[in-house]
Image (tube, rainbow, N blue to C red; front, top):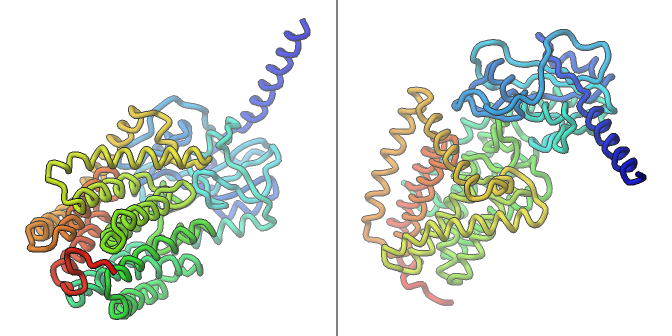
Length: 504
């Protein structure tokens, strides 16, 4: 009898705790603005809300994601799944507990605005924090339902006496950051392409130089467009040629490639927002931390070239060390947290390893299962250490879940590529040029390791187009990277890179 009473008491306690946690009403307040957070901060915790993922949004898309706790890219339409809660529309409640927020208007509009959100009651006070964004003051649309239902992944808060002002400053910073991303990418890729034509070794070093400048801008919190373009321009146009004059041998060049990844690894360990708010960082729409697809594609050049260069001096140990450093930096849950990047790197390194081993062509069939094994082992180790992100979460569904995730990624990439005439034509033109350079480069009279490097990059970019959701960015960055590698492998000083490699 006593056991039954205890069990009933425990069950009642859990039921009361769940009811208490789920007591939040969710109220959409038409016309709610960021200025209203000043009054709401005296009653609870406040922040900014991103209404969805993708280039477009609407009231219907935002509500579908909110009530289902799912973010769906606008190219895929509304989120699907069970409805977890109901919304009400009206004025800010006089009393809590409640979650009040603003949402987009009816009709499609650009997804370039953050909306106010406040959690009132149950002790919330200060600035909202989110596990899904890792940025204090910024919440995603799929954070709302878990908070209303009291789930472990709900929004939290931190003490902040001027929370509304912090949220407003964060909104300005995100807006400045978004305004610099496209110009910064175009500048870096354009300068790298020109350098590859004039000074191929400088063209190769343009990528680690751009990565270093991008990290420095993020670390110092510089978001001004003019300052950003000046720093990136000087780093690539002046820094890369100077480095090319100083770094001539394979070991020195390979070390420069590895140094870029080591710098990002340290940057992530100190403060992930350095990369998150860097000019080439995530767009703060569906992805808020780690590496963006642009950064991942730019980093692919030093990742593969560095491995090939270090292999010349240290053999398989050099390749393995560079691969481990790149994989941890790009896809570690505590660092880059880029699941697509893990797959791209694994495929690239598998193809590179087969080519460097001078195996017969049929051995390329080994590359795909080898890449899969690399990704699965790495992600499993990452999860076993207690890390958590969408990368480790992809394992929860087993092989079937991974296959479904890859299929969804490929479908999303296609939908984005054909979402408009401009994007479609841009992708088609970039990929046609990419295919032409790949055809010429893979038939060029170059040493086997160089052909292996070009093949690895081509296959890695093709993989990236399937597993990532920004095909135009990947096509443009991939085209530039292949052009740089083609020029470097066909025009460089043969004496300094003699084959077979010289042991020193």
